[in-house]
Length: 157
Image (tube, rainbow, N blue to C red; front, side, top):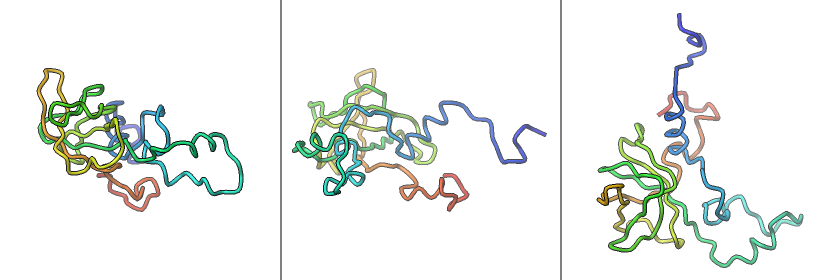
């Protein structure tokens, strides 16, 4: 009998955890403001209590999301590589992996400007200089209602 079997535990590795982190939308980059990270639902500038950073957040004029996901059928996005629209670099990949759940390469892209990325013809560059088409998607890639950690779904995709 293997250790952990009575608790349905399986042997894993750090790479599997990284893939899962990306699939469920756990961010890896805290150097952007909450709007750019798509976390605007957690900001309430109208609340009565003061909080650290309120003045800075109120002063920001560009509040659109700049962090999105991409899915790539032909490649796995490489961290640090540019995302191209034609011959122009419009973003940079901050996380990438092959997703068994999506059956394709997935990644986070931090765009230089906010808004309007869905439906545009973009391509992440590979280390060898080639590019493959990708689709821009909202995060997370799976379980947007967070049903799995709340034990509402017992099957992990």
